[in-house]
Image 1 (cartoon, one colour):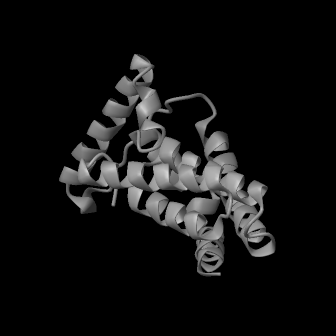
Image 2 (spheres, rainbow, N blue to C red):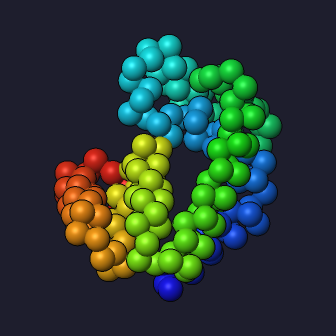
Amino acid sequence: MLLVVVLVSSAFQKLMSSQFMSGEFYYYVFNRGGLFRSFLNFSSESLEIVNSNSESILILQDKDPNSNENIVLKDIVPNLHVISLIFAWVTIVFEFIVAIAILWKPKHRWTHLLLSLMILGILCTRLETGFMALLGICGLFLCGNLKLRLLYVTIVLGCVTMMITKLGFH
């Protein structure tokens, strides 16, 4: 029940955030390289744009806030604003789907596959290892299937390893 409360609260918090709902949050994070960072290494052009955007933001932060200067971030992919908006809505819908599945059928295989998919999505987008480990532990307690339990143990051990080696966020 606690996991359902956390997921629903997270989804509602995102719904109430104007920056999240407009796609601005993901737009900024995409252009800074905060999402899908490990995949940017395959495209040197995107990595250059991310580095340029990050440098521009750092230069702006060093300036006087009263000077009313601003910058324009370069998009790492075309139509990034639309992609960011869609990504925001998909995130919210998926969190609600996982919460409903856990509430409705907490021991069902599909529920745990959806939860595992959510954890994998977090892994691919942002290495929030502490949250991923928490989700894995909750899934471990809810699951009765041996193979899925081993998957959750692997997720938790992987997250703990990333925390110890400081590869992810805590």
